[in-house]
Image 1 (tube, rainbow, N blue to C red):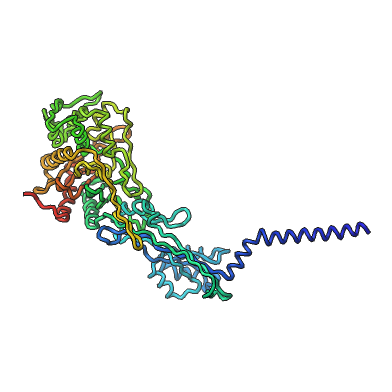
Image 2 (spheres, rainbow, N blue to C red):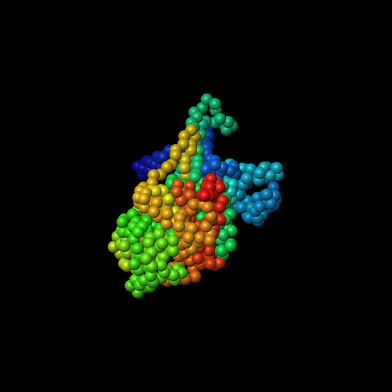
Length: 559
């Protein structure tokens, strides 16, 4: 009797424990999901998207713009035709492989299949006209670049990140990605058994926020002009590549920037990663003789030399340690003054100036000019080769740096540094975007400059550059009557620890008018084959572009 009672007690106890476990399972473990399922029967909600910000040129024309696009998908249970038939109809319109589409549709265990992202509204309408049951569309956003590959390095592109979200990469798209990106909103409310919204039910809305628009300093007329002329110049001079930067030396505003080879930001996926890096802000090179105006400005401003100082080593080659410094044309000019050294682009004369300046002052001035540091330009991907640390320079380093070898710069560094000479000694900050614009508000972006040399020094070096343009090695390219302050540079490219005399970077930097400059422009050509001298490649290309810029800026010939 007792044993039967015990058995009954054990059975009831086990049943009670099982019941408690079941209650715990359904109310605690599964409670959240069950509540969600119940809520889904009477609650409805959807994510509300907003467009990415647009990018405008200075004349308000579009450089990058949102385009309506669609995701094409299939609700597999709703398909009334065979997957082969559906694939055969879609493939020609989507410009896709029918076998790929069929393989997607034949996936087991999937009731919804995405087929192709970001198709145009025209393509969507063509598919709708086929009347294929089970094919659905979901609105997406695509990025369009009306000028195709023009300004590609400036703009960058929009691709997918690791989570599948649209993200800007390189250029403005990368630098201002958070600013351009929209913030999604959300709408929620109650529905009846038929899925129809209940008018008096609880409704909540979080508004989506459109991305901020960018208004840039880019002048589309100048941009298209340099794109065309740069390609022609690279072909004419047999160069591997090249870069042109046009800026306002007073404000630092980047008016145009182009590098070649380039890419189409709309079809970025057809190009390798090497194409995306902007050489104007990412690639370093030894500047050669265009660097001489920076060193000369430092020497004059510090008082190491004056405009009347006479070079006492300019009568021949000069030996520094185990190296012999020679002029580019093996011609020597005894008793040269600083203006003669710049006009003749005299390496020995620059060694004289460098030795007068000294290592410490040389380093300090280069540092003030921003050499060895990023300029702060608002483009993703800027890089800057650092200067050799102060205290680690020897007499050879001092000598070679004085004429632009043994130091490395980027194109934008040189434009910024020489802008200080054109701008009365004030070093500007390069800036592509001039204004941020949202719904009902806007913000002007005007970075301030910093004084690095005196206005008098800037005036003296400008006068030297004017004579260098008129009477220097590139004088044959000079456009008569127009006031140009310029300097050529031909720098050997270091390869495997030595310089290759046949591989050079040819460059010309100049501004016009020499007084109250309206633009500064740098032209660089990588390894031109028609001639190794910048006076025969980069300089004529600079003037070919400048001939279009003179009338555009209203620059009149001088009497």
